[in-house]
Amino acid sequence: MAMRHWTGRLTSLRQVILHKQESYLVKKRFLHGRGSGRGKSRDTPNLIMEDKPVVDAHSLHKPVMVEEVLSFFAPQANQVYIDMTFGGGGHTQALMKCAPGITVYGLDRDPFAHQIAQKLSLHHKGQLCPLLGKFSEVKDLLSQREVSMVDGILIDAGCSSFQFDSPERGFALSQDGPLDMRMDANRIPSQPTAADVVNSLDHVTLTQILRTYGEESNAKKIAQAIIDYRTNFNTFSSTSELATVIACCHTHRDAKSNRDKLGRHAHTATKTFQALRIFVNNELNELAVAVEAAWDLMRPGGKLAVLTFHSLEDRVVKRSLQGRHVAERGTSLRQKRVESHKDNGAQKWEVVKRNELCADDEEINMNPRARSAKLRTAIAVNKFSSCISSDIQQILQKEGGQSQTYVQSTLHTRALLGEVLLLSLSN
Ligand SMILES: C[S@@+](CC[C@H](N)C(=O)[O-])C[C@H]1O[C@@H](n2cnc3c(N)ncnc32)[C@H](O)[C@@H]1O
Image (cartoon, rainbow, N blue to C red; front, side, top):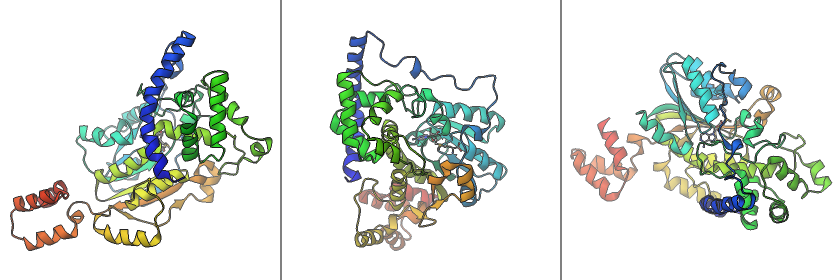
């Protein structure tokens, strides 16, 4: 099934869930006489004790392809970067060491990662500026700090190891915990948890989520098992409860032959957990927004590096860099040529290497997670003067001596990039 259909539908479904979730919680309160379900396990714990020093970043999350990322950025003294996925701060710390006076804005939606960034910033006064928020909030967060342009941006998609390693966050299959999976923890109280999703959605919708975001071939069967369990027994509240129900949908042979991308034995619920995590955190839409925001925040010629860990993420990044809609259906080669010719003037990114880079064997041996990493790099082009489309350039040439007001009004009536042109004229 094409991505366009499901992705579009699923985005609006997130809104629907917020409503459904309310009625589900009311029912739950009525049946069990309990609170809203947003109890103890959902409170954001104070994850870093005040009196403990910041732990070594590598013990929280081993950063991937650091050398490749740095050699692409080739950081110079006093440059400004955004690490859109601060995590344990491994990439940020490596960047700050590259040249004197480098400033990094370290964004993460996870309050725990933000606490790490805050602690680390005490040791790098003025060099590391922690930001708490999502990709979709980065432009606002930076404009509050009057930052409008940077030299480079890193996006290292997915989860940090400490998220998977904390059972209370509900990401892990290996350890029991509340079925949560919100990267934001309790930061946005209205955000549905994975439990809210499996406890409130119907069969068709659950199937779509598992198929689209988990690429799960047993999606229909698993969705039915979830509904049956809910109807006959109870609502889901823990990761082990869900994993057990999913395991029952697979034959013994399925379970034995199930392998992850690293060739390791994988639990039969792995794909369902991935799907729920992506859906709960709106990860693919956020990633597309991140690439868009990166271009807006980049100085002309600024550099973007994106690390992804599965094909869905990589597809979103590849398409975003090509200026194609992430949910677009497959396009024929001929059509692509026509479109690339047509859109030449508006292309935003010059992709540095056509094919993505992968980690080398040495790194994979030391960090198995690196095996599925793909690095895509691109340079922001067509910013300011070069982004003026060719017909506007002709007007400018013809009207060489005309006033700025004339050019402005021409642009206005044509509704073409007026703001950007003004900037180019004033520079
Ligand atoms: C793979 S880890 C980054 C690890 C980091 N590069 C390091 O060296 O430790 C991804 C991080 O990005 C954060 N993240 C994922 N999606 C995000 C989003 N939409 N907005 C902000 N942060 C996000 C996660 O919370 C997680 O901590």
